[in-house]
Image 1 (tube, rainbow, N blue to C red):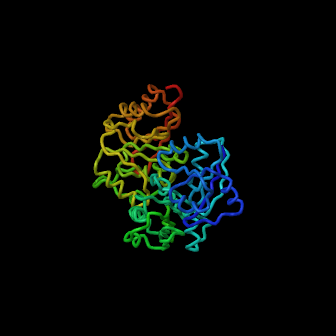
Image 2 (cartoon, one colour):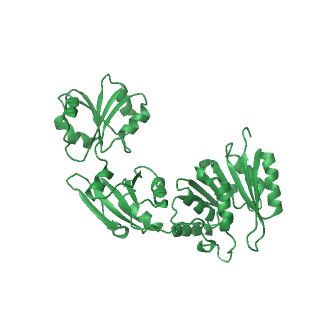
Image 3 (cartoon, rainbow, N blue to C red):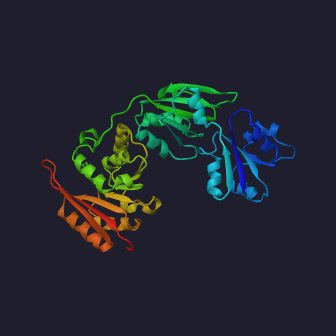
Length: 396
């Protein structure tokens, strides 16, 4: 299979001599409805057009039934969240020749005279907020965003304001190179009061950096009313994150998050981390949300309710787990966690009571976990805390 993928803009393209020759000698073409409108005047007579639309399985079946090469027209740079990548994934052994145009984000950077040396681009088009959240937590200086109908410029501005990223402004490009082209740079608040063309993309420009912390002071977290000590203290928190190997993790479960201090610091240290935080106390949901906004940490999934009532198989398997609370049912909780974890998963717990320490160690033997580290720490006049780290072994 041989595919020639040509990137085009939002107006009638000017093809090179080589591209015109390729088009003249081709009979089968493919692309969207908008692409056909832009190129149909240069196509040969009796051409065949395969529309790229859902379901994609039908499109692929048509490609596979052909005995000839296909020229595909795609928007912008087909190797940038584009159709060449789709073809590579579907047909890894096919010959795919790509001739790109400017991506929409590149075009917007050019039209706003933006130095794009430090540009990082993400897509929320049909995707979650995860990639954008990670870029914001890292405070990237210039972020390009491919949008969709729901995650549009207004929604993006709302999310940044929601989590305190007022240190960004937004450039919005609408219908770039089209008849209704509009380019404007606004404050996030101004962006909330406009309607936008369905074809758009944005640039987020960092104006200044927010203060970053290597360990957040306990007093800066909102906590449970009347329970100032219900938080993992900062030195213990940082040691806990070390034991959790949080920089190497992909999915982290925080069981009994309370103020969310562990979950928030974990996400700050590893912005690409998927965090699922469980908590029984309903009031902690608002506390976590408040602390997320304070420290600019979107993207933590909170699960409120008794952990023992949760269908934990519904969540992505963790590769590292922190036991922050167990409601006096530690042995039962560890057995439940064991149902979903895989070998080499890390489990960390901080114990004050000797009984909890003993139950954790005994459970490790029963469940086939290896106790790999034990650290005893004392802060100020607080009771000594024992940090325990175990991993699930193979074949258990």
